[in-house]
Length: 114
Image (tube, rainbow, N blue to C red; front, side, top):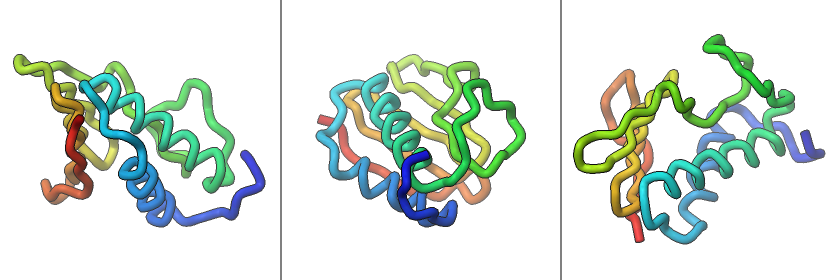
């Protein structure tokens, strides 16, 4: 971890969304997921206070991890759908990213593709 200020899970998640909004829109679904993974890892390295587990299990250790490949599927239209503990992430063929809450079904974040 770098010497960044420790933030709560909610604060870190909001920072992830802020940083994602600031990067150029993705041009495809894999790029959208890569941007999400890199942004999430960066925020967690800086502000979680929890070292990254190179092979995280399914139990929550206090740190957020990018979507796992074994929980990511491709729909017929090319959309990549990644299921995480709390969210379902849709990375659209045009690079758009839509994140919905598994608990409520509500959209918690979205941004257009390129």
